[in-house]
Length: 193
Image 1 (cartoon, one colour):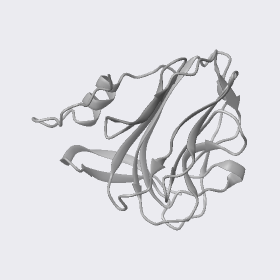
Image 2 (cartoon, helix red, strand yellow):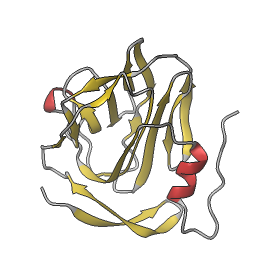
Image 3 (tube, one colour):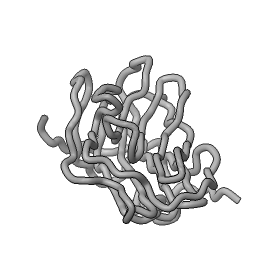
C-alpha cells in the first residue's frame, strides 16, 4: 500500500496544509507498525490522526489498534456503540467510541491517556466524559496495526492521515492550535469545566 498526499478541509474550511497517509477504502488490510508500543515506561500517551471514513461496516473500524487485548484500541463505530479502550496495569480505561458519521468528511481525532485524566477530542473539542481512572502505565504490544485491529480485523474503510503517537499527554490547547494553525479565525475552543 503506497503513501498518499491528502488535501485537508474540515467543517471549518480548508486547513491550508496536506496530510500524508493511506487510503484503506475497500482494502481489507492494515499496516503493521514494528516495535514495542507501551509498557512500564508509558505513563501517558496521545494518539491522533486525520480520518475520512467512507463506508459503514456494521462493526468497529480501527484507526490504530493491536491484534490482541493490550495497549489502546483507537476506533470508530457505525452506531457509536462500544468504546475506545486503553489497557492499563490497573485494568481497562474506556472512552466513548468515535462515531463513524459524517462519512467522507475529514475529522481530526485524538485520545489522550493520563492517569486520572483520559479523554477524547474530535476536531480539537471534547467528546464524551473525561475518564478519571488512575493507572501506573499502559500495557505493551508488539503487534500494532494502522487501519485494522483486534484479531487482525476491524478494517478501516476510508482514508487515514498523519497518525501521531506521543509518549506524553498533549493538551487540548496544543491539539486545537495545531489543527487550526493556518486559520486567521480559529473556531472557539470549548473547554470542559
